[in-house]
Image (cartoon, rainbow over all chains, first blue to last red):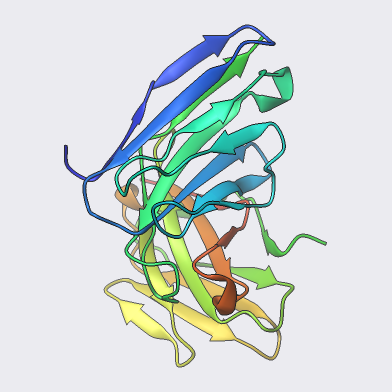
Length: 115
Length: 112
């Protein structure tokens, strides 16, 4: 693995189903993030984690949960998917949470369609 | 009002021409500014950070105007490969960590 990976690449999901989007980074970055990107709205932060063992809510956290059991992995779970969660989901990581110039590196994204 | 606003474009640019566009931000206390580039159906990638004094990276020049709360990006001698969506990104609260706010993006199309 080089950088940050996400799985699955795309998924079609029935409403009401549970779904976990996976994100793994091998850069030993402390901070990780989940965004959703919708047309006309840009990227919006769902949840973040400044370091392993801690998580926080972003701008649009409702309907999503995260965990950060270790440095490398930051899964995003939709407990009961709804059509409004149809979006492209990007995971990102940065070396630290406090630096103002730390670059965020993004994964390739997961395209999720909820029917 | 959105925290970070951009003209969605598209800006249709002849190859070799110069194009410039701005982004406005609402939080006057914002301390960090960036331009990211996003190609169609791909992930965003950092193009450049924006410093108070302005900065240049090859054909790309970024400026920050704190008084008017906007940042700009200028692309000189446009290449076909510059066609992309350019995302204006702001860190509105350094104390809260590296949580970034993204604009909706400005689409640039460079044509032969």
